[in-house]
Length: 147
Image: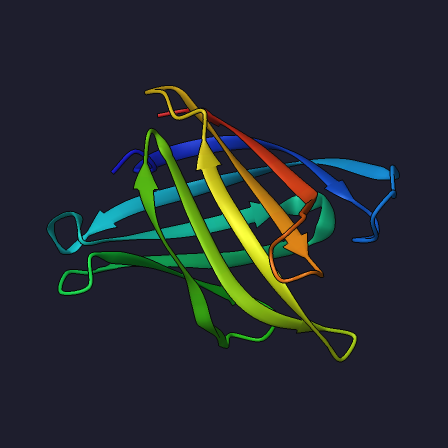
């Protein structure tokens, strides 16, 4: 429920995902989020005008398993990315992970929602090339509520 509303977003993203990279790009975005199914889900529409980019986040609680599933749809393809990241909220942060492949090699990806207040929150993304032992955080999104 904390995401319901309209947001402005300050993005800071590494230009490459490689360990030791320190070449960041900065850009603005905005998002509109709606709670659905009585709190069992949320739908987010993300827009990044300077990059001519938009997409949709779909988050659903698997009631039986007690696990959240976070899916993404890029507006360029219109294809739901599966599997989604799975995770839970504990101690004020939501941690979501998934297995993926980058350049033919297995990686783990992690999205973390933290710094959650009524007026702001942060999402950050990390990539692990050693099965989750170490992480390179390559994208930070600082959200500020508009309404």
